[in-house]
Figure 1 (cartoon, rainbow, N blue to C red):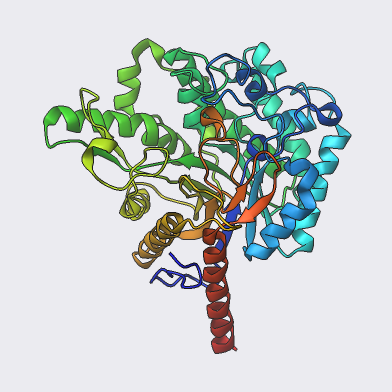
Figure 2 (spheres, rainbow, N blue to C red):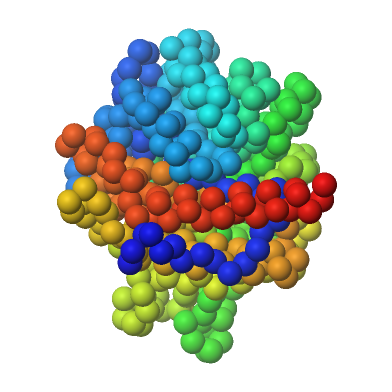
Length: 455
């Protein structure tokens, strides 16, 4: 595909719609032991033999910490309204308790101020999975005390940055931390126990509610919310067994998080299914979890197809796939957003992550990733279709700015709008970067027309 001929989505978006791009600390920052940073559970997990597909780690990653200004210039060049980033908790508070690290705090002060100087709104995430290892050694998210340590950390960061960031997310994708980190064990900290996983999920939600209440009591000016990874859950066949399996999976991955956050209760069918693996819930927990949010973030990559015998495989069904082996199903995003509006009373929604990994290659100084352009265009169009049907979507952010450390996949999977050479760390904007910039230029032109019409 020729990036000079951008494929623009057909839908129109509100003039105040927020367009952005996203990253996370562990995936890009590097500087693993720089100036007092503590060890995180991902630093430790990467050292476990076989944990990371290519045997890599995040010690250098994209070296973002040492290339902050030039990376901020890239974001400005992209033309987005907002940049979503996460704080490395062990960088600012090495042990997860006690003293904060002034060098770590200074880095995020520079990041936020650098964004504002370039006219970009900062969207801050407090927890994108890199828990301080010291807290894990004391029980981690399975231990209720971590909830209170998180609130202390959240208050400190909000007091330092809350007057300048547009929004603060408590947790990114608690399902991932709970299930992949503590049930299947394929993510840090590598625990394999379903009961522990469900207790972790509960404590993440409790800490979210506690943090919202404390930050508001402190007078934090930022909008506050949480970000969930959500998908339509589809039965593989019309059989009763597959329908029942899909309903249960929807309960475990979607309703288990949305029902407590928006209704103050766990779904009864999942609670019954868990039996003795159901979490310990203390008096008042559900009211805490249901503390009203200013926004709900949604991360969407693909749908989930469920069969009772676990036999369904996307590769065997002939549709287009990303390099992660995930189906490309843009209509699933419209379906998901409409379902959220139908089944729950919602605050404003933001699509906080959407993107795709493909086997990009640098050739003659260019990366021709027309497949990513097609992916982004079709998914942006899917958001527009949801808005046209009344769903309160207020923003959309591409995952990700840079190719980066893709967790258990290491550096083999590239999601970025910008290609990173992991030997030289040179950055090369891909065709998708230029396409997104052109699309955003079009949106800005529409805003000017809207303002002119309203004058």
